[in-house]
Length: 358
View 1 (cartoon, rainbow, N blue to C red):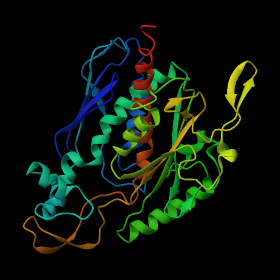
View 2: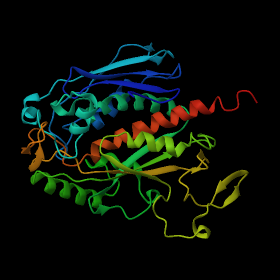
View 3: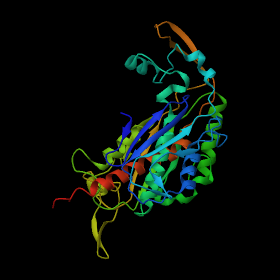
View 4: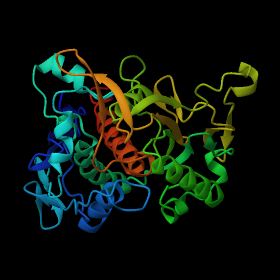
């Protein structure tokens, strides 16, 4: 299960402390202009060491394309790419080789495969998401030609959260602060909280909100191929994600008469007066903004003593070393956007076959 997607497909490879992270993108339409500066910037938004509230690991994360691009455009053939790892501190993980880190994949991975790469988590490391950001950047470039825009932002860290709907904020400002929050006041509070938690060797979680604008009516299937189910699958595949909701989601303290999205004729186009459904009804996009929220747990690696057991079941203790994020949300924003872009483009391409024989 290293491949994601139906028509637009990403197969990723590599481990945190291996030689490289990379992937193959298949099904990308031909003729898409490849903006290398844009793609690299998407990787820069994800890479470590970008601010004082992220892990200090230093990686250039420069992508090298190996195939599928000619004269600055996609050719329709598989796009191979690689991003070299250069700044691993594998010795930081020596004390973890034979013990199971609490809330990590160490135990389950060992039980499933009988072997694991303990350095940085190996394949289960979030460093794998580099491949998603490259594929997502390609998907974004294709979606741009369809006037579909995707923006994610940090909407909550710990108990500090935005108290207005996304429509109340200027989403063009999210890069103005290292926590990627469109409310400058709340952003400063979030940064202070992350710094406080980090100083104690602890971690904290939060919520990312994502908004997709310009999606046409008709993406998704009514039963097993629901668009919101595909987005949920995409988001829940991201490291540290614990929950997904779209539209009003778990805000269930309302009557149907209060939250039904009433249709009306908007200058010749059928639209809805509200968007409690989050842009998807019956599993199919309805032309309104698609918006959803993703909950991230506190990062499992904490720089504090924890009780655990070794591979033989003996009681022991562990204090992690190395360079780790105290809060994953700022660097997860571009990953959320990438997975949303891959999913939306994939389902757009699928929609082109829905009426083929009618």
